Length: 620
Ligand SMILES: Nc1ncnc2c1ncn2[C@@H]1O[C@H](COP(=O)(O)OP(=O)(O)O)[C@@H](O)[C@H]1O
Ligand SMILES: [Mg+2]
Image (cartoon, rainbow, N blue to C red; front, side):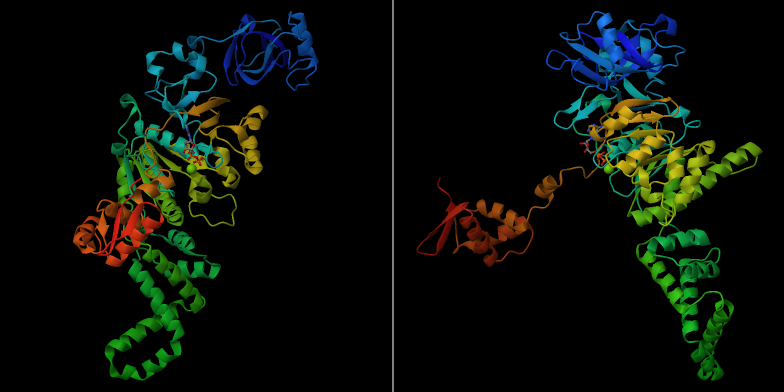
């Protein structure tokens, strides 16, 4: 292998007679002047007698390269020639000369370049593509730390150098984005990342609208040394059942965000909410105030008349009327129309019915303080509100703690933490018209979270729909297969992926990604490792049907087959046992129906006997 030309200082062509080049492979250029720079193959092509280089017009080969090849002794009409375009991974002061040899490096020669940390102190996410040939030269501590998976072949040994993300660089280069179309491997990668986060015991809050991020079930067929006990390091909580928002802790802005999640909130409604909500209000005190005021505004004249009549001498009723009229007097001019109050009540009741206010966020806080990964599951609208509330609160506490540390004041301890979510564009949509309670706090963290050790880990299949300030702040991006052109545009703008990588994006296989990272300063092609856990509902839906949703008729058929031969004259003999077995009432009629069905389907036979009909096993 040798250099046969260059375009710029950063890009060279190499040719070989024997060995085809592989995309993304790393090669060492034996150029002493430039201190043996490394290069990465970004494009390859092979030529031979049948695909001649001279006639076949190719983007890859220009006239100069052809001339160089000829000068270097290649017979471009007859030889098999493998060609590669190589991106040099170092800053060169002058171009590499033509004719210089190129070879596969030994692991030792690229170790510092590719391994930022050892696997115990970094996040082992997969293998670096194009380094497969170096597998056998790896030291023991880098071998089989990232097993791979292929759908038809199952779990496979590690091939290639492990890709280890150095999370210790996050304070400088914070936040991670995972982007890719549906089925490209985002959720799988998010799971792998979160496993590593747990392994490092980084406290993390995960919002899980898909109910898929629990870590109790091991990935099938993993060799024992590769497994890990993630159940012990994670907590899964259900919004509305295990966690919620205590009404007493809400301020006016929180309440507004919550009500917005339950339906559109007009400017009038907002004014009314801000006016009527008092600090430390309970759900009851607030909703009673709403109710009484609504009644007061509707029946003001009636109530006044009733008061003039001294409420028929009933002192209790009189006091009630006075109270309600006082409310009316106090708020009348500031809360708008009765219909506004009604609309607020409807939204409030919806939240109440969804059990938003029944519990607090203590379980989340406790998990974070114990350096666990806490997954909050629930419908997306609920998570948007709860997430916004919790993240804002935790971020405030973290800042207060850290600021107090610096000024020497006292504040409750609060650790650095991560916020992770799939479908991030729902939590922080780009379009300002879409209400999103969490958008502003996520934006704040994107911009300044690193100072406080608060980091984002956001996955989305629609980067074009994610708030753009946030996208711009994601210093590391894992880009999976992407087809949609609007998303490709964002990727082109917001990553350092080159044109050839962008060209390959629509064709990437599931689980393959380009990692564009400001801390590394270049793009790395990665295959994400096999996850150590699986989502509890990752069974094929039709397999699930077969296993968990056996129709009652099917069960009865099975049970009846075991009773054959069976006559319609002795059904009652079996009825008790059948009912017990299937744990339900069964009628004679149903049995007849089922047996007749099996006769029609050709599963069993029937014969008219003297006493009646007999059903029996088919003879053939
Ligand atoms: N790293 C990987 N290795 C092997 N197969 C993968 C990998 N990532 C994803 N896959 C395959 O692709 C499928 C879809 O991945 P998933 O993460 O659910 O996609 P997405 O979340 O992007 O829609 C998975 O069920 C799995 O079969
Ligand atoms: Mg997914």
